[in-house]
Amino acid sequence: MSALIAPSILSADFANLQRDIEMINSSNADWIHIDVMDGRFVPNISMGIPVVEAVNRIARKPLDVHLMIVEPEKFVEAFAKAGARVISVHEEACNHLHRNIQQIKSLGIQAGVAINPHTPVSVLENVLMDIDLVCLMSVNPGFGGQKFIENTYEKIKALKGMIVSMGSKAKIEIDGGVSMTNAAKLLGYGADVLVAGNSVFSSPQPIKAIEELKSIQY
Ligand code: DX5
Ligand code: ZN
Image 1 (cartoon, rainbow, N blue to C red):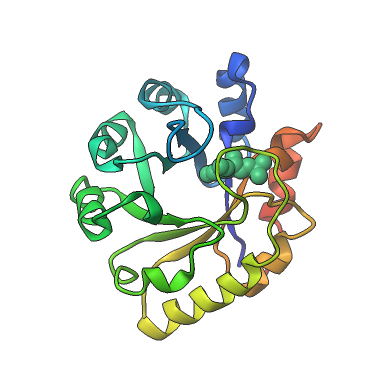
Image 2: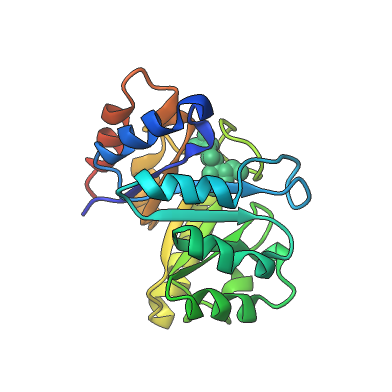
């Protein structure tokens, strides 16, 4: 079995975004990961609805949209209309997480929940049967190119145990600091989807970097 690979365009060259999306199109990546930041939930601002809409016009891979924003319920419909096929909201940003998940599912797309490094996986217990994806942040969200947090392995193990014992269909996505140095270990612990920004886009051969991640068997 191989992982789903989701290059993160946060590390793309925004002046050459079409070129970089076409690179992903021609690779064997599975999804395109798009990081949306509002300068409130995280200390940075990235891209929004018009960029997702533009990427969707040329992308030939499903768009995996990671909302690092407060009050995501105000925007999920617009992101779905712009072409998102998976939308993840942060548990820490939702007062009514269950309602937010139902809202995403009512739009006919996959629903994910992201949790920060400090948030225990146990907060997901009562929504795990309702969601398609858990995005485990393995860095503090807001920036690409950060160092992987080692405690993530224990969180994957605990979450995988919950998913298996409950019979949930949720996939485990790892976001932050993923590279060939930790990818095999992450998959061994139970990860299903690997987000990779810096390790793909800083590579002189990004298609090959994606292929290497994809070729790990577990
Ligand atoms: C961080 C973002 C990540 C980021 C990962 O807030 O959610 O998706 O792009 O980038 P790398 O792989 O460079 O750590
Ligand atoms: Zn992300």
